[in-house]
Image (cartoon, rainbow, N blue to C red; front, side):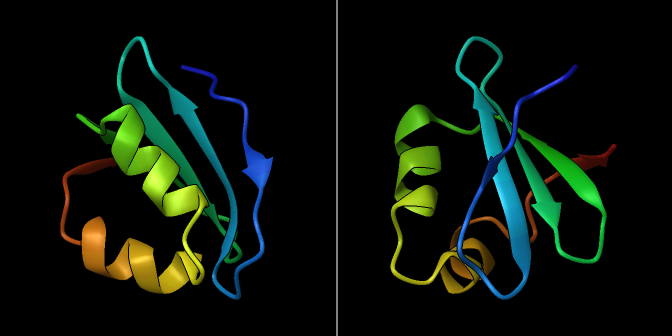
Length: 70
């Protein structure tokens, strides 16, 4: 699945994308790795991209969630 990534301002995350139909969120880290997280609601995705600190919010809300490396 190809999810378009939008660049974000973060020291650890380069871009975030979301497919509302499948509820999959793609996160590309500045290390170069991209991960897909399934079962992410539109509200949870919006909360991440609008957070004051995207990296910190990601760590609290999504770390430990099941993912697939792309």
